Image 1: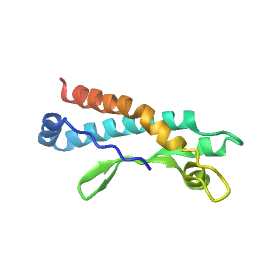
Image 2: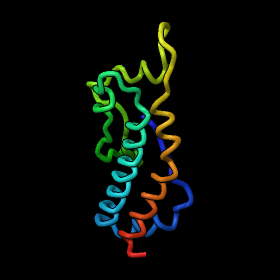
Image 3: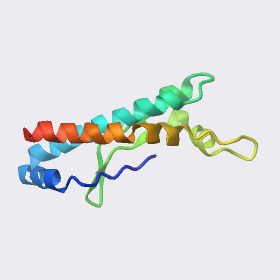
Image 4: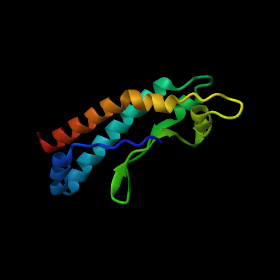
Length: 123
């Protein structure tokens, strides 16, 4: 799974904190949309033989751990072998499709987060 850290948005996040429950919904929507952007980018990079791995790429619900919200993007249990494709094995060269997908989409994902936060706050 890829991790993305949003920096430089302290003022927006402070405003969201003030909104309480509504702010949490705004934040969750922004994270889900960013996750979808990354998911679609990763799907474009997946090597296709049967299409099963491509179909298994999903974005999770918003999860919170230690007060930090996140969305996980990657293969579900049906695409368990995606890690072998990503990192390679003794008999197979690595094809880092998830890394490429994340790198090509991270700016767009950040823009999606920013846009959703501003819309939600009415800015």
